[in-house]
Image (cartoon, rainbow, N blue to C red; front, side, top):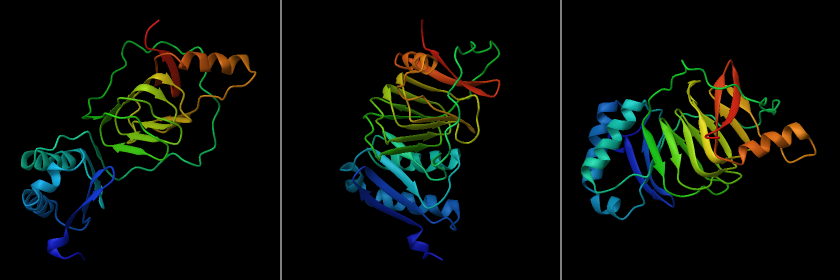
Length: 231
């Protein structure tokens, strides 16, 4: 059992700030200790990058918001994105057949789910990962070897060439959108697809051509489909 004064441990890291939370501690106690430590270390937060990672325990969306609100109220920090634990990367999964083409138009009754949104104001290099309990907007490219996992939607304002998982908590109403949608693996809720590599296959090349322009992936009738954002 962690000592009562060690339920919250704050450390600096290259990407920003890491906040370890004791998974066995009462959440109200965690809030009290986080507020006390943040209030006593405002200079540390003022000089840090605006990325925060909560480690050590699973957080609900409400709990994450409560902790984030404490940081924002006690410091001048402006958050780019918040990373939380509790996600399992969709790795080492055999590749299923590519998404069928052409995709049917989304039905008129299709609805989306509202989520908190985190904005990441840089591109992602190989080995970098974003994991968030809401939706994620990346203002740049997500390069091969990068990973984006979100309970909500994923929007990349650039080329998406890494692994992406939207609706990670099981929400099949979520979508993935990019200016160039060519991920190594694309997953929405529990359904996985992939963009085929460049080959001498007319059908697969047609799919790749479609994803090089602004497009989005969504689930309909139990399948992942890809459609252009505009004609």
